[in-house]
Image (cartoon, rainbow, N blue to C red; front, side):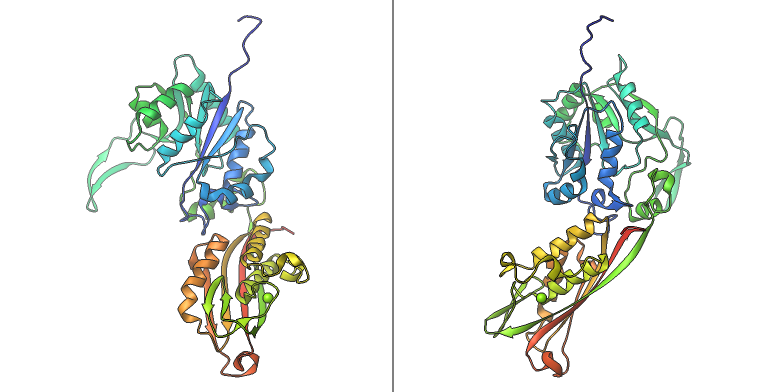
Length: 405
Ligand code: MG
């Protein structure tokens, strides 16, 4: 040791979040799903920031998720350790390689590669893998758990043989490596399909150590993982994982006026009249917006977009619905489903229902199975029956953290 040791070189974390998987995420990519009061990816990033060894962190994302990323992490943007995200590739391995290449300017001593959907990683485990990968003869280190279940090799529903589980491990992340070594290994392994970064290192002949993993460091893969995390506060290590369901109703009417089309749920329908209104008069989206605002107790569409405000003249109503969606998300809510009924004699709605569902689902970043659009007439009774206008009524359900305002 000299008195003039060089300052320690950087230790960077790559959080891999480029997956599109919505199977577990109730319509959202699972890394952006809210768990308790925060998005999964935010919980993950915060665990790394709680580890003093980490000097840089970069998320590898899918750039189609830019707005989800911004919403999930905006409160961390002021942290100088958080580098701007980079776009990943089609396979995880491509995403990691692109992330590693993006760290060339940082040139860390050690890089940790972690799945965004493992939010319960502890700062202690992160420090342990950094230590193990920093040992003089190590090229890397991974946390792993011994296999405790008996393993069977099966074929066509029948056991072929029982596999010896001695020396078998279940690999977790974060996996830590000397940066230059794993970068070269990934560049060399381009085009080969390997399931984790330790396999990439192995192919390059790098010595990778195994350290004790953590049973709570689970990877969120299925919807059941999210459901299981709800009532298990020990995993979250903080409160707020209990949730409740809220519902809201919305109703809107617009009068017919001279014109040649109407816009309902963002879909243009040719018609021999138009609809009168300050904005595009999309009664469907207005009712849905009010239903979401109602579920959150946040007033109505007129409070947020006053009709006398010139900014909203002829505005497209997806702006209103997106705003309501942002308010729900900021409050830690997740939209569960929406049901809309359009009430008119003409135009015929049925041919456009599929397009309407798809458009609403797209605006709200939901799976279209969570959006319902129905239509009815009023048997020629009342204003709708006389063809004076169109009415829309909607209901929305939202999951929010228990006790949230
Ligand atoms: Mg309206």
